[in-house]
Image 1 (cartoon, rainbow, N blue to C red):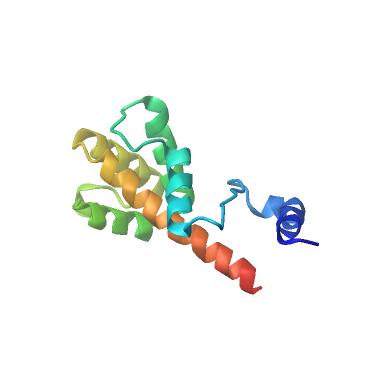
Image 2 (tube, rainbow, N blue to C red; image 1 turned 45 degrees about the vertical axis):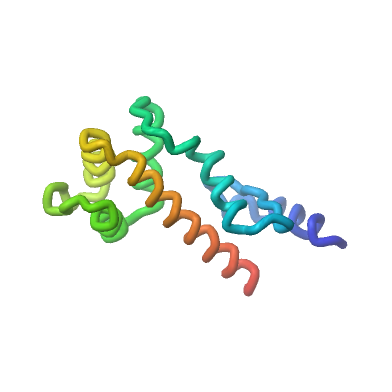
Length: 131
């Protein structure tokens, strides 16, 4: 059985363990570029876009992938005083997106989310490989 077929079989067996989806990367290309391309496909070009769907997707992503401490670190990394925002997770995600929209920081928020999620994906891949 070849590597690709092994990967396909793994995905088939364990797809329920990846509720956010399974994404294929071309290992023949540099992995940082593949991750950047994947982020671009998931999030678009990163251009400032106040479209309601983008704002909703940002809120959902924050709520799904970040705990309160992670959201507070995001605030710090973007340069937002976290004291200006609530400490309750469901409201913090909402307030953070709204704050970034009002202060023209959506690009910075999206960039930081992409960076953190790419690291999270890589950690999951390394964990699964070593298991």
